[in-house]
Length: 340
Image (cartoon, rainbow, N blue to C red; front, side):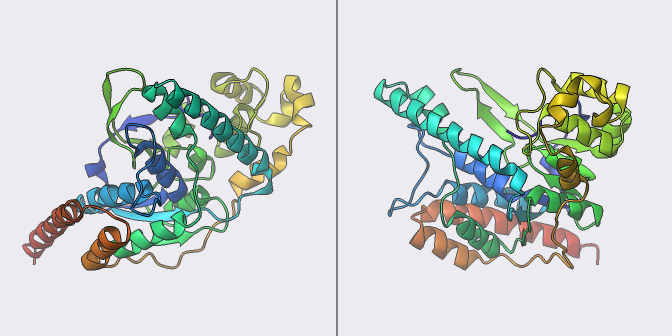
C-alpha cells in the first residue's frame, strides 16, 4: 500500500539532469518492482529469455542506469533485509491482491480484452527467486555499489542522506520521509512518457523532489508529529489506518491535539495497534552502517556477455546502448581534463 502523504508534502518538479554528480540512494526493491510491472509485452506478460526466465528487471536496470551514468548521476541501490514483524499483515494483504489480480487477468485474456489483461498482469508482479542476485550482478557490471539493509531498505537510504553519503533517497513510497531522509525523489526510476490505462493518451512523468524540512515547516509539524499523521492514515505496519481518517483529517487532528494519545475519538482503535512500536520503527529504524560508498569502472565486456549470451538480449541493442554510455562518459572525462 505505502504511506499516502501525497496531498500533504511539498513536492517540486525537477529533472534528472538536476542530480548530476550527486549520489542518490535508491530503494532497490521499489525500483525493481516498477521495472517488473511496467516492462511487458502487449499481452501483459513480462519479457523473458530463451529459457523462459524473466528479464524485465534486467532490461529496466540496463537502460535506466545507462541514463543515470550518462547524466553523471551516481546511483547506489539499497536492498531490503528482514521486514519488521508488524509488516506481516501488509505482506499478506499484498499476496491476496496478487491472487485476485491473477484471476482477473485470466478472465480478461479469455475475453480478448488485452488492455485490462495488461493492467491486471501488472498487479500480479512479484519478486521471483534469483532476481535479487541477478540485479546485483548487473549493478556490479555497471560498477554501481549496492547495500544490503538489515531491515527496510528505505530506512537505510534515508540514513545515508543524514550521514552526507547521499544527496537524497529515491522511492515511490513516502516512508523515507518518516525515517528522516533529508530529501526524497519520486519518479526517479520511472520518469518518462507513459500511456494512461484504457485511454489513447500519454503523459510525461517527471521527477519530484521533496525536502523534508520544507514540508515540516509548511505543515507546522515536527517529524514525530508527521509520523503520528502517517499512523492515522495507515502505514505498512497498520495498513488499515483509522476509520474515516484521510491525510487532511489526520493533519487537522495532530495540529489540534499534538499526538495520538490525546485525540479523544480514536482511543478505542488506538488500543488495537502497537503504535509505540510503529513510532520506534520510523524514529529509530534499523539501518546499515556504511563506511564508504565506492563506484567502479563499467565492465562493458562482462555486461555484454551476460546479457547477450546468458539472457538472450539483442546484441545490437546492448552494444548500441553501452556505446552511448561509453561516449557520454568519455565526453565528461574530456570536459573534466580541460580544467587541468
